[in-house]
Amino acid sequence: MADGPGREAGLHYQGGQSRLPGSAVTGRPLELKVCGTTSPADAALLNGTAVRWCGIVVEADFSPRSLSVEQAAAIRTATDRDVVVLLCEPSPGLVAMVVEHVRPFAIQLQCAESPAEVARVRATVDCEVWKAVHLPAVAVQASPAAYVRAGADRLVLDSQVAGEDGVRFGGTGRVGDWGRMADWMAGIREVPIMLAGGIHAGNLHEAVRQTGPDGVDLCSGVERQVGRRDPKRLAELLAAWHALEPNGEAVG
Image (cartoon, rainbow, N blue to C red; front, side, top):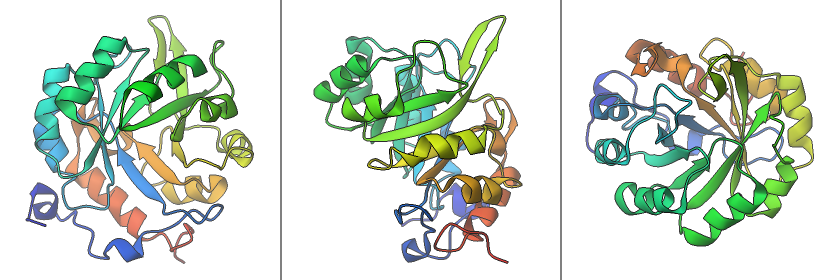
């Protein structure tokens, strides 16, 4: 792999793929997604690191990190990580545009999509389809198991915040209720489950210990301000990640 900005910033993962931690519950590799990418430069910070997925929010009114399809396509060319595009109740036309122009590894349905909508997207794309499930639960949210039956390849358990300007589905920086999330995970482990919601270098180990996820998804925990990635905070997060034992427990 060629040297990239991530390596120059001291972020490169030296341990190799065999050193990936794993879920203490399922034994699957514990994988890392950094979301809310808003620029090619911020995407390039992930190159050559232990981050598996670069997340980009597209055409989502609730998010201050939302981009156009064209902007997402430009970011796609700047990263060697697999790309996950987050959409909020997308039209079939938007889904088709994202697949054509961004070529994502996965589309993550982030808002109040029904199982039927998950099934519709699953039937029309050849990439993975992920579904975010929120705590506290939104009124129209189906059960996690219903989304799995509809064809979701992966679930993301995330926090949501209701405010005067509406509901923010993720990217809030609010730490999730890990006890409730662990309870939700217990009966739906047939697909991988990502843990999201206010995770950063300082609480990563405890979040993983309490919930036993198959992956971790974070955004604000590596930012210096909304939509702007902080190389120092990213390096701290990766150092904490590398300190996880192969079973997902913290070293020491």
